[in-house]
Image 1: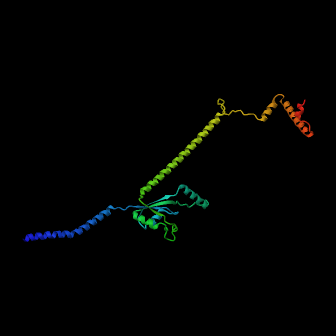
Image 2: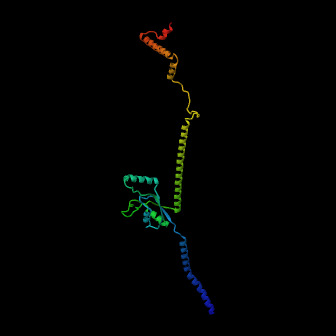
Image 3: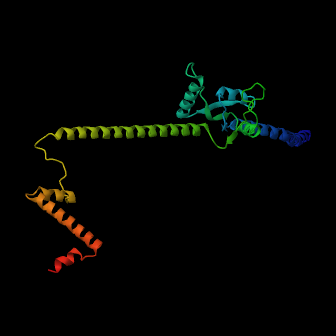
Length: 269
């Protein structure tokens, strides 16, 4: 009897102890799941686009200014075009008078900043947009404003691919321009050589003449000159001129004195 009572008490204690331990096990299980989720969840980097970069603004400046808000990773600034750079350099040299070396610094047009955590990138883009870059009075960028934009689902590989594509397009354009210049030069050289051959062949007797032959109607002066060049042509021309002059004189006298016209006087006989 005593043994049966002890077994029943033990059996009654076991479920009670199990009920007491179940909340602790659940808490431990939740903690382990949270730890596993934290280990699986990785920090996703975010990229912020800088649309405005003042003169003499360098990647070191943006790293120093934005590192106070979060961990900054890679930074890339797009340099200005070579034509614009040369133009600015020439303007600086002309302003200096050409005596001294012009102090020209390389400027940038746009930039990309990578943060280790995209939440920090979103917060920085939302809070610093349209705010002064420099907080101190003596800062050279105090009167410049941040122009920031968070790029959603944009990774650094996209940027590298885009830059590689632009580089390839620039090379292709340069290659096409060089080929076009080479074709124009070859055409010019061929034309010069052809002209030299043409000039050298002009003195060749076996070569037929390349002049154009066509007949043109003689003018009135040429016809008169030919008639005058015939035998007796000058006398005929004088007689014709005298007759014309006489007829004109007779008509004038008839008009003055009221006589019959020369044609009528000739027809009457």
